[in-house]
Image (cartoon, rainbow, N blue to C red; front, side, top):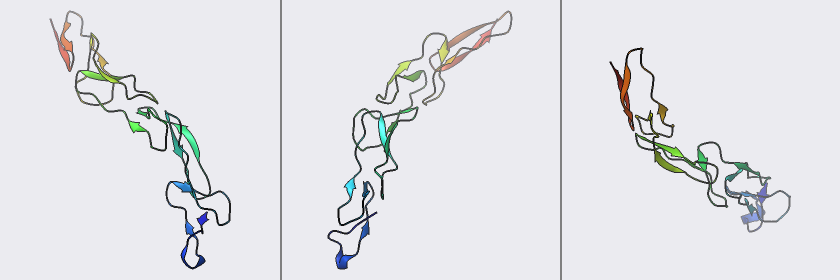
Length: 134
């Protein structure tokens, strides 16, 4: 919808981004309402207030309000992101024993791979997948 109050020459103007107006008439546009922690406002504008939707996997919003969800940040090699959920960015924690992560990113640590019969894996920890030795 359009806002007509204060418009030059009686012209109505579209509601600005982040605002809506669900009824016709001279009323001003209203600001899109905020959402609780862990949710963001979707499809607010023109004639509708939109709705609150949950942050997608890998993103979070710790406080209520109109801001969007933020992406959980990746961790350095040897570390993985744990506890990232709709309301928390989580923490980088070291890869647990018998696992590793060789690159920076959001992916979890991977389990150390097995070796052929007669060999065992050495050095699999932190950022190294190790290697099979006899």
